Image (cartoon, rainbow, N blue to C red):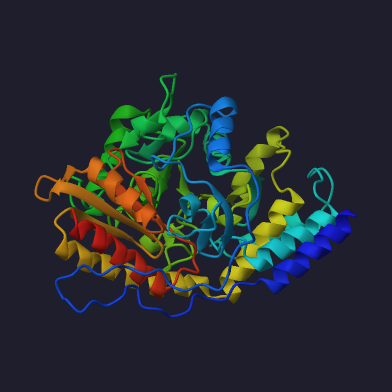
Length: 476
């Protein structure tokens, strides 16, 4: 019976494969040139089946009764989503939304991508789970495929279930391998919410008041708000001073994102990582690249975010886009470094699960076969240029930054003082949702829009997003 359900679902997927959005103007023209244009969502050839489940109010009540109370909502009226296809999501009424957030930069190929779904279903009907103590093909096939995408000797993979797990393991490996304890991370960075990763995170919004040791937070090489502007090597001197004055002179490692995601899409100043990696290695440390949000072609210009700085790390951590929404993470390092874990047994029960790794391999194939990295570069650059034009029109936009499909828009009430505008940010977000577009926000002050859609996002989608934001800001 189970096999027949899987076969039926496969047939449904094949019959409902989504085509790219049809070319359509972002908004209707108006005879009066002073009249605000009303943006119009691009056409899309998928209609979800009628929803007959519990209401949003019922789901909200259950969530408030039974789920952890610290979970927040993006909107005043929580959004209830029941269906998704490629770059679009649908609520219980069947209303369509353009997902420009990618569910926190996690949906890489597109919601319910048919090839990813087909691979998952095929594997699930054969073997849903087996411990890594036994041999299974999906885990080694995916590890081999990942190793083919990483530079140098970075070809040994530890699988986890999330980015937090991956970063925890990376920090543990660095400490074991070097015999040192001190780790340097960046202010405003985010690396997870467990013990070591919470310590490495440098945002008060994501830290509890518990003992957090062995971490030093260096100046953030932020071209927009930083004291050295875009001069990466000047910021790098702070790492030298931390090593000299805050440690024994020997450290375990350095961890950073190439573009800070949760922190507000801050791309590290040019020339920063080459200087820092040199200093860290002189002090005996390992260099860890947190690619949880920047990896898997999201930046367009490169497959991995660190490549834009011209460096090769000692350890790479992966999650989010690796599985297109499937719980999956990974640590990639060299054979020499990986051997340090053999001093004791290390096993992750679900890390490398055959269904999860099958999904990961399918994601890699889709990114390559559909040329999604090039799409991220082409459409992402187009979108960024459109947003830069919008910045010239609206004083509330203080900065537009990022690359590919990892873009940030910072709102300020005063461009010269760069005064954060969190209330205005919330207002625009609510209005965007009302007009059918979902975006994220981030930054310590909550005043930065995060644009991180699926890599199948089109120019028509970009036009609609920019036209909608223009429409809303013109009325503020």
